[in-house]
Length: 130
Length: 201
Image (spheres, helix red, strand yellow):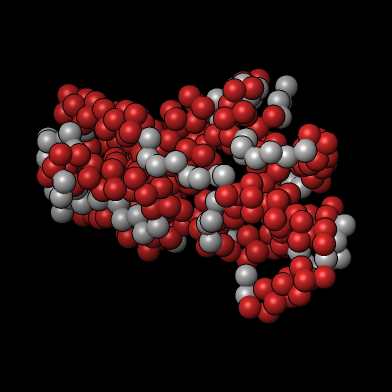
């Protein structure tokens, strides 16, 4: 809230018993809404899910050339086969620079928001569901 | 890097991505789980959704995506995931009593006041559009206008206009002619809690 608004609210609260009472009730209610710390069970589940995904990735071809082929299939309709090959050429075997390589180039042609949506789709199609 | 917290050892990129995911989980996980509880059919579904979102975060970071605002990104993905779940199975929107009880504030409030607020919150829910309600709840989660814009995939100006419309409606409900943010905040608090009691056919 900007300073002017705060002053206006405070001025009103000084005069309005109803709102002052509501503020007190709200502060009491919010005071009990202590945010719990990170759920250790959920953290363990998350890490297990990551481990399972990584293990399955090495078996189902989610590394190296297989990933590049699947990503190329998804982005070639937008960039053409030659541009797609050029963009994917510098991508490492591990794939660690895959998305950082393709998204900026897609953004040049499609704009930032559209490129972000397309990259999300590519991740779904070529990495998560594959 | 805290090696004790990671389990993935298949590649340096994967290890680094897992560490980053754990760090982000520790910072935003509890708030995301609370938000998921508002949209999910059950607390189990909320936990599953949060787990899926962080798995996705790991995958995208693992493959080099630069996520500038992790909080906005996580809320965006979580919201879309849960909306897809709702669309896929709308009849599953019934909330268990235990889920509602676990999220209610532990304050000693007069039952008549509770009933009054509950009825008021239900009236408010009819007045606010889905977009207005979503903007308000995200604002209640502490997200900035630009973050809300990312989560809902709308322009920042639209966020401002939507919140302004929602606030006008809440002020009319509050019956107080001055700009009392407490009435708005309390209405939001009721809405967020009472929304869990709605069932859809």
